[in-house]
Length: 363
Image (cartoon, rainbow, N blue to C red; front, top):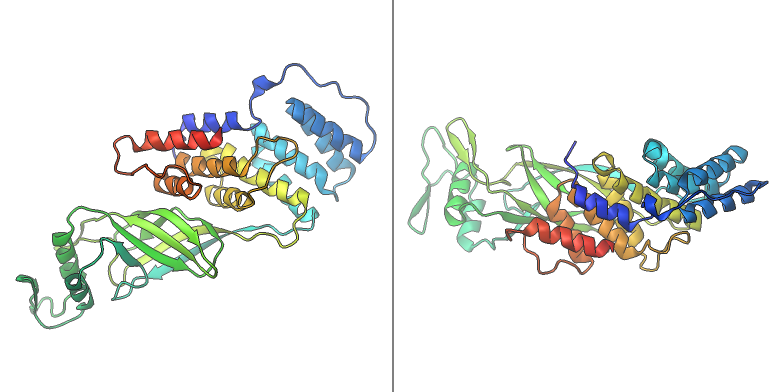
């Protein structure tokens, strides 16, 4: 389990209706009859901060009629507040969506990419490679000597009859020693919302995703990669993403339901917030995708708590990424919301500055 940043979680908790101190005393529940009465009593208790009584009313409604979504929706929102229900809270949300006639909007996928000789599958955009860099990269497999700018990039020998990633890595290391590279690649799905790291199967190193941009037919991923020295036998490979290297990653998509009704939309929001409340035990991919997907509707609000805004949901998504130590992704979420534009990862107090930005979004 990854370490949870307690400061961020405290801000998230305070930003919701999760403050136990806001409720004093119990809500006197008048006798109610019927499904609608139980639902009304549940929301009355919920809005007053009596989440235990609210849950009892919603569960009674579910027992009375398990074919209607309102009871599941209320129980899902109560689950955010009561950690005893965290393990089943998302099931309440799922049932509310299904019974409301909607479809579950989030899906998780895994993908593998293999870098090509010309570096077009994963394209390097920073540093901007020079013509000499491209010449060296494209010379992979050559059996002729290659000298560039007076530097012997490759001299064939009986032990190494063709140029490979070793020589290319040495050349790039000579040009850009110890700096991170930024690559970009496309996923043929315009709905990718959450993707945090990509793994290089050759070096077993991970690259951090900076941001994901959704287009008309694809999503573009930007990631910063470590400039690593991997020793295999007597050979040193000096870059992260070379020809034939296999990259693997997981991501989550959010596809807006075509005809989602109010219960389902509120249940989707509850699911995302629940994953955030769970901290390190939450489903970070699905949770962030859900929060950002709902936040795309700038007019979204929850009728039983006016403090849930689109900006706050983006802040929760950034907080969730931060708590799981995906700091670059958290910054990318903030920047796409118009916050943290002046923060640089290289700043000595980067994490403090990022935390402050997230706190501002959660206010």
